[in-house]
Image (tube, rainbow, N blue to C red; front, side):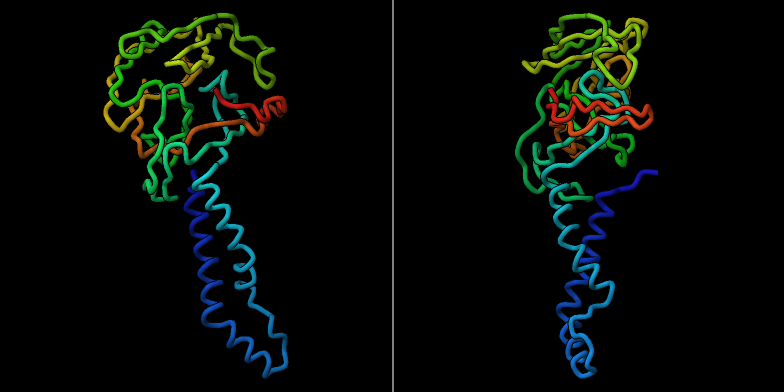
Length: 266
């Protein structure tokens, strides 16, 4: 089951703030006057008011930080290997592409657009309740082609070098497939590593990116569910730009790689 944490946070913040506000405006003074007449503690508050007064500032601060500044995400799959590994906890810059209202996702401040090579978190177009992370390879108006495991941008192949084996020494918490080959790609000056698998066939195709949409691909190109399978990402589905790793912890394998803490995301 997918929980909308943003909605839960907004509701809790609103409820706690409303209880605190109503008590301050309508009930606090009456309660204190009655307590003085009865000889009881005038500062005693109902439990709901006490908790609301304590929690509201914290919830409000978290809501602002998470909605407009930075939000943490966990990488659950290997579609972005070797850039991001299963168990990486990343930080996403929420204001890279403008500010959006939580839950409603309406843009209230417009600045910055994705660029070729950005690693972006977005709401999955097939199921917007699910967050995906991929790399931007196509901007509005671009023609993207993928043939025989070569990515073409507007008719030109994206420069790719290397092809050495992706070794166990390259990653601590998982065992690379024996046919994995690591390459260095350069898309419009943005250099990053990708993986290709010799035993998996290429998913060939050609696409023209419509206005207001983006074409996304995983760096683990042969093992990524991306725009080649389900199409384009609308601009309103963008969540933010992935900027860094703050922890690596793969619970399923009982493994952690603390050397990844603090790494930026190319």
